[in-house]
Structures are given as structure tokens and as C-alpha cells.
Length: 78
Image 1: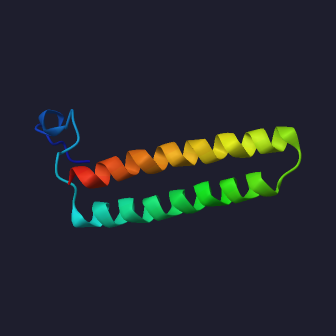
Image 2 (image 1 turned 180 degrees about the vertical axis):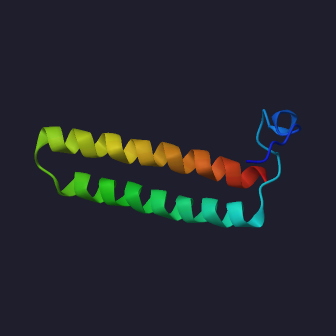
Image 3 (image 1 turned 60 degrees about the horizontal axis):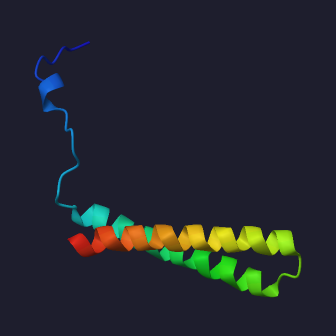
């Protein structure tokens, strides 16, 4: 086992401001997945007649929409 004395001082307390191209592509994929999940939850909410299921689907749609907006914010920063 190797010991690296400088490893402790090299830890990042904050993520870097820059997003790599690979990370940007992954965030773009996440954006697509999250949008699809929100759209599906919305679609099934419209099809559902059970009040409890409809409420759960609405909450899921709102959660995915919130996540979509957060991911979009990260993409637009760069």
C-alpha cells in the first residue's frame, strides 16, 4: 500500500466551476430522462380516475419537473 502525504491537502471542498464535456453530455441525458418521466407522470395522471393514485402521480410529476429545472440550471450556467 502506497502512502501519499499530499492526498489530504488535495481534497476539494467545492466542486469545480467548470463542467467537462463528458459531464455536460451526461447532464443532457439526465435532462432527457427527467423530462420523459415528468411527461409520463402527467400523461398517466390524466388517464387515472383513482384520487389517491392521481395525487401520487401529480407529486411524481412535480418532483421530476423540479429536478428538470435544477439540471437545466446547471447546464445553463456553463
